[in-house]
Structures are given as structure tokens and as C-alpha cells.
Image 1 (spheres, rainbow, N blue to C red):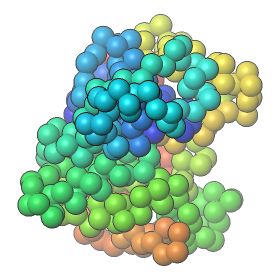
Image 2: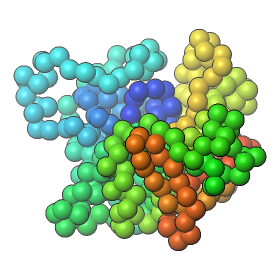
Image 3: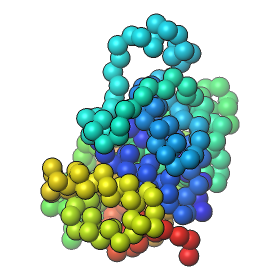
Image 4: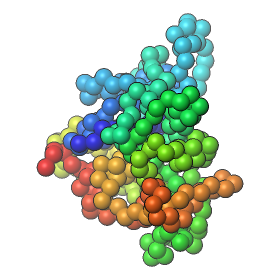
Length: 306
């Protein structure tokens, strides 16, 4: 059993699918959820989902402030940051004006035994690190599993490189580019015990497609999480039969059981919008280079502790 904080966005389905997975996985104890940037509608979405599972957890927002409680803020037009997909599959998303500041969630609930999984820009993590450094506040984190980064030529064997990335050493990556300095600060921060990056050189080859949908079907009666994932993805596949990249659930499964993947110990680098990695023994930073798909499915479909 691992203690987990999940930091998500709502720009596409897979962050939400990961929330569902973590809420029901037998090897996960979910401690808190943070959302980026964290609009009242995003907070409401998370809380409504937690309520479906009969769970009450701290919910953090990057942009939360006391202003949220004022009538003028609540009446004013604002960007919701909720995708069209979320609005279609979740009935009546209601704004919720009760949240906590994201970095404070980290400081209150992270420790050496906690795993943080990030599926979006790492603004909350960056703020937690900055507060620790500038104000002398203690912030310790056992493991950080990030969906993002890139490993290419020189780290990934040629035969394991996806055709679209063959020969490349660097590549833009959305989540890290969404908060560049926060990511660099977190990578360098000594208070994080272990860092693992589930990067696009592998996750761009992992899809929730019709084959995975059929493979998952027998497990849906044993898990509320898997049943909900299966149900919402049935609708998705009807409109997009080619499937959906399954980035964040892959990262979550790697957090639950790192042995489902092959890893290289590296130093991450950034230059002009592109991220790369180079082998670096002893860095404490690992990046994914290959995936055992059968083992991945075993973790994804797990419904009880062995």
C-alpha cells in the first residue's frame, strides 16, 4: 500500500481516468488531490467524484485565495478550465469555492513515505519547493512520479525508440513546459528522495483502444473504478475508435509498481523549449525506457490485494 497525492489538470480525459483509478486501486491510499490551475469548477469536479466513492479528502488549487468566498468573485465570469469531454460525461459540474492552497497541501500531507504523482504542469510542486527554500519551511517527499520528460538517443536503445522519436535527443514536453522553472527547481531539490519520469518516448505508444477496452471488461464487476473508466471510455471509443493516449494512468501504474517498466538513471536537461536526458549514475532521477505491457495491464486491472 502506498500513500499518494495526485496532482491533475482537466484538459483531457486521462487525468480524470487516473483519479478514478487511484480512488479504487487496492494498493493506493489517496491522501489528497490537487488540481491545476484549480478553478472552482475543477475543484467541484474533483469533490463530486470523491463523493461518488464516499470519500472526503483535502483538495488543493494553485490559484485558490480568500477572494473565492466573496459574492463578487462568485458572480463574475471566469474560465472554468473544464474540457468539453468532462462536461459531457459528468452531469452538472458545480463550482466549489472551498479549497486549500496547493502548495500548503504538499507541506501538510507530504513526507518521506508519500508518493506524489503529477499529471500536469508542476506549479504546486514548484511553489512547495520555493516556500521551503525561501522561508526555511521543511518539505520532504519520498517519491515524485511525473508524467513528462523525454528520453531519446543515448538513453533509449535504438530498437526501443518509437518511430516518431527515432534519433532524437530532445523534445518539447507539455507538462514540464507548463511550469519550466518550477520543474527545474523540483528536479534539483534535495528534499525529494526519488524522481521518476514517465516520458513521451514510452507513453506515446500506450493507448486505451478497443483491444484494451475488451481486455478490461471482465474486471469491471469487481471494481467501481474500473467500471467507471470502462463506461466513460466506451462512449469515447464510439466517437474516436482509434483510442486515447493513456499517459497518466500509465504513470500511476508505474508509481504503484515501478518494475512494470525499464528505467535509466539520468540527468534531465532543458534548452529552448525542449527537454532531454543523459545517463547519470547516482542522480536519483530515473526515466522510463521501455514497458512490460502485460505487467502494466496486471497493475491496471488489479482489484484486490494479493
